[in-house]
Length: 351
Image: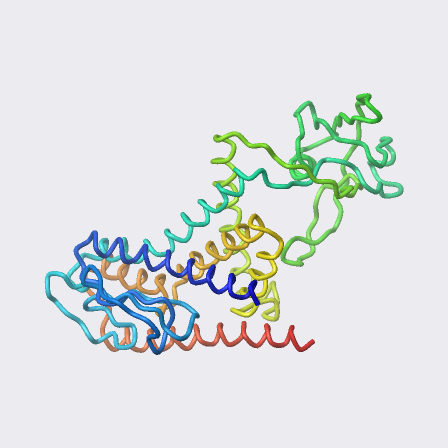
């Protein structure tokens, strides 16, 4: 029960920082913010501060910042007062809209940075099983060998080693430590069929070894921690964006899509595994929120950005009739995706 409570608090925190991005940018642009809400539906708790009503609502599946002159429920409701969202230039409105997803990326970066400061675990480049009749076996690689360098480049982690093997052309000169002695082995990687993180079959250069599963803690310097946080944020963003693209193209089945139940369960499990696992999954979900909100669906930030780009290019607003139709279509798509995710979650629980 404690794990699920922590998961709910984490999800609320991610939503809070997303909406705080919108709120801060709107205030900076001189827009009056009427409501800042975590959750939808009936208000459970609220107070007024800085001319804004701050609320916690009953349905914790998102949040919103209601700005003067902007109403997703009715796009025809507009205000042209100086402190209204509608009187701002397309670039100012795009800045306000981008601030929410950007806050999620920044928050994820901060979480990854704290993970880096906590000396995260990573796989050591120690050989487990050696595949029979593989380049590794022919070269003389043995179980429990520690790979120290590839083509003269020092190796610290299993990931570094795998990346170098996959990206290097020609033969490899691998330095291994075995029983306290260093040996140099020459081998030629083979292009083999394997699966990537999306379950797709791909070709990759491999030498025929598996990891021994031994981990160690990385003691990162301040600069390395900054680099780690940046790399992880970029990797998570790219992974989620690519996953969405493959889902839309049909390369990944719709049954793989998860919803809020999956998010809560994974976060709950992560909280029980320790603060570092919790931070890792919270960062991943934060990036997920950032990427999803940039999709060009009218009910999301990306859809509003699309309308403002149209206005910026053609020097006129999208007609109200078209905006209403697209907004309704956007809500249908959004609720459809949420419904699919919820259906998949329940299906996994039942089976």
